[in-house]
Every structure is written in structure tokens, then in C-alpha cells.
Image (cartoon, rainbow, N blue to C red; front, top):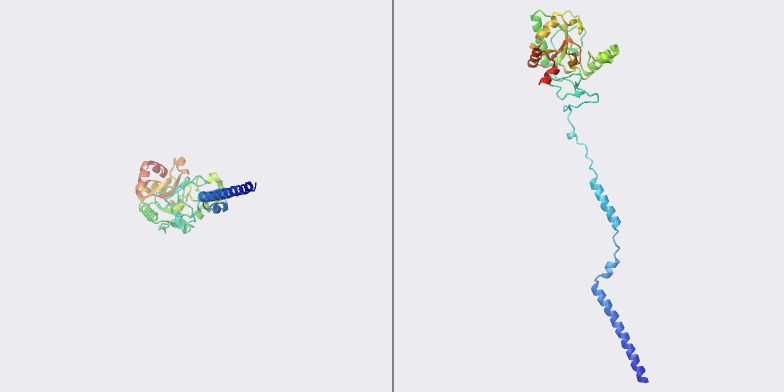
Length: 283
């Protein structure tokens, strides 16, 4: 009986020893299969929502347009006036310094344009003319001096009435006519500021030596007016608003309004009996 109990306790001890050894072996095996397991399990798992939000922010920042700081060197120069139509549907000429430049109701000078080569003419004017209106661009002034001298040599006496007008002067004059005759009537014989040929410094109104019919219809048919129609082109001038061309020029017949375009163009226009508008259409 004693022997049985003795072997039973030994058996139990062996079983417990086996169980203990098997547990240690499992831990050893687990440790070998998962190195640094304690470090991995101790890390906080990354927040994927935060990562996505951060990536999205980076994308949005990359897509945002970069604001360019204005560079003074990149600004368009003032002399580079674009040939575009303004809010009134009038085209702005890009070559206002050109001698044969076309200025009319559809083509205006750039804002604040002032000819840079204005000089005083050497011709007689009607009384009361301001100094400003005695000026023309240099080439035109030389030509009108020659025209007056040529007319005088043939017994034709002429007087200047109005040559160059500044933008401010043209504005004052046009407003005066509007107040007197109404806008639509004024538009038939006076130009909107910026569309007047007088602002180019290339045009001049003239009359006979007696000073009568200055810029008036009664000048038409006079010996002075007839001489100008026949000889003005020889000096580089045209009758800018001839009779029968009102629908083309937009203005009534003005035998007193001379426009300098240069001899070659003036002679072609006179010989063909056309206007400056028609000349440009042909060209």
C-alpha cells in the first residue's frame, strides 16, 4: 500500500514536470517565431484618416494657382495702343504718328495723344485765331506754307481758319455745337473728341483772303475753293470731305477742310476722285 502511494506521487510529479516543460517550450517557440513582438505591439497604429486628410491638403495646395506679382517690365507700353474697339464700338488706331493715318467716326486716336512735332505755320490766319490753331505737324506745316505761296503766285489769296486742335479744344467745340444744334445735327459737321482730324495736326480749315465764308458752305464754288480742288494734291493735300461722298466720310461737303497725306497718296486720291476711306479699301 505504501509502495503504491509512493509511486503515485512520483507519477504526479513527473506529469507536472512534463506540463511545466511543455509550457516553457511553447513560450520559447512563440518568441522565436515573433521577434521583437513586444516592440510591435507597443506601437500606436497609424491613423489612416489623418494621412488621407494630409495628402488631400497637399494636393489642394499644389493645385492652387500661384499669384504672380505684377512686374513693371511686363506692363504694355503706352505707345503700343491696341487696335481694339472701345465701349462705343470705335476702333483705336495703333499708328497715330503715321502721316496718312485714317481718323474718322470709326477710327479714333489713342487717349491723351498729342503730336510730338507740332510747329507754327508761316501762313496768314483770320483774326482772333489762337496760337494753338496756328500749328501743324512739321511736314504738314512745310507743305501748307508751300501751298499758300503757290496759290498766291497764281493770284489766289488764302487765309487759315483752324489747324491743330488739342483734345480739350475739340471737346469744348463739339459740346458747343451740341448745345446749339443738338447731338445728331452736330455729328454731321463736327467730330467727337478723339475722332477729329484736327487733333492729328495734319488738317487745316482755310478760306478766301477776304475772310468771308470761313468754314461755311458759301466757300464752295469760290475761285479759292476751285483752285484748291485742282491743285491741293500737288502739295500733298486732299479735300477730305468731298461733295457726293457724305455716306462714305460721314460728314457733309467741306471744301475748306484740307488734309495732308503726302503727295503720292494725294495725287492718287484726286485722280481717282475717291476718299481716304476708299483709298484704304483699295490698298
